[in-house]
Length: 298
Image 1: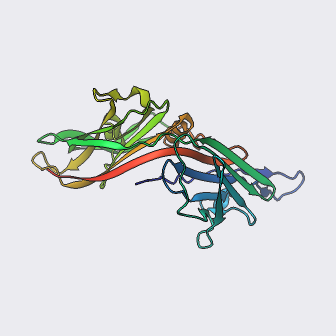
Image 2: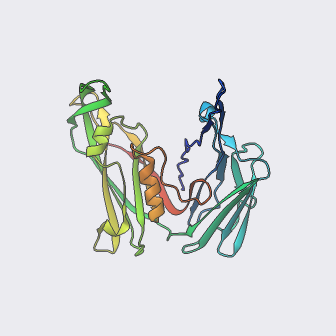
Image 3: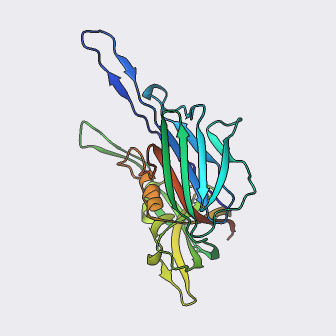
């Protein structure tokens, strides 16, 4: 079970040249490689996405890496052969899909060589993380909550328009337990119900996801670590029972560069996440992920 979120980087580099004495403006831009790869401890080698930036006029249309682009992946002393997927040219796939996966502590080095440009990133694979126990609890009755769908602030005034209604939710508490490997790194936890709740304000006061140092997790007497989070399930009335639903639980371990990338992807004041690629754009990381889907019944 190895979920990977594919983050599409809306990154464009535009250079507009103004020619003195001419009425016409000739736009041009320099292209950069964009790569994203997630290598998971003890998991098969993943696909790697490589594209190039585009101009503002068609920035949302991804463009594959140029012809002749080569991807080289080295895990310790092993070279993992990759080739472009002819059916999906944005993706490079391992030639041997059943090859030996990266192990704990292995060094990985990724290089992309393209005409007139190249990029590189490296790191260390973290210890494998495994969910040991999951416990779910909810109150007998829902609670009243203010549901905010949008928040609009007028640019030409101090008026604050809030589209809010009063409704009811079940705050569902979930505790996750995993083995303490004395890893000096970071954890990402996510609670993802099948019907996501739309209010970011409710999510702010609850805790459906978090990125934190593993050393700050709660220590249990048996030597395990524990995290507790809460997500909301909306219902129609104060008498509505908790609806049966499916919950996906994700636990992912990585280093500080992984933590900076994850937290910056959702930062409202940033145009792009914090990247770790030299010579290009994107993120190449070593992680360990475990996830499970559970049925929540009343």
